[in-house]
Length: 286
Image (cartoon, rainbow, N blue to C red; front, side, top):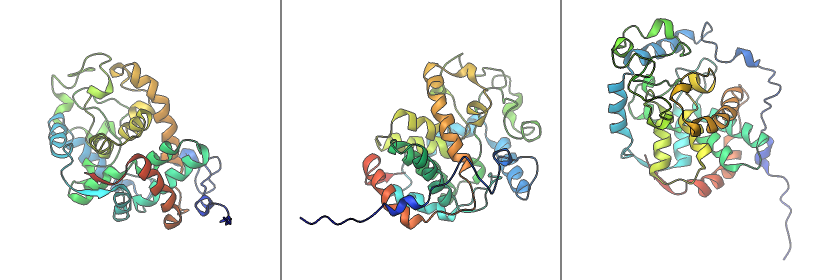
């Protein structure tokens, strides 16, 4: 049989450089003090911090975790993010689908042996589809934080956006531990409702085979007060602490691959479809 040399994988042409981002220095990311997108970002967080109460979060759990809203394959879900610009993001103003491929490619460059990690980079924001189905963005995007206990100071806009949240002064919810036990584990903590928890639930519901490390990345990548500021450690158990370095490793790709250098999505799709077929095949329930 004649062997045809097809040459190098064309999908390797787009390789974002995390070490030297000429367009933007690392300290410029997550600027929540000023900038052209500041008003949009602040208004989104103000609505989030006013309305995300423990009761609200429990209501969203009951609405979304049964995965009865739609059925579609994972690539279709990813590409639906062409229609979404994240109103909480101070760094970019382009559709979320491009960010998905940027993150995945950054991971593929640094971790070529961990295809499940690359897939997590691609799909981590797919839960934002909730905004396309009618959820307001303040219940979908942005940094997450525990409800049912004290809102810590490291939460974005903590000083001036929680005044109208009734849980902030609730006698049972405003203490350091609130409704939780010391070191109860994050699995028992209600975080503000958003795309992280939703996608995690979708992965579990459909029995996807992504490793536990990847599921932690999906579930907690927006939990900045924990993985970037060291808050809420008093609620963590040993498993959470063991998984924390994985979430932190993911975070650098989620954040620092955001550039105006857009990937060729069509060129990349076949490779990532092969990973979807391996770990999350077929039609999923959402």
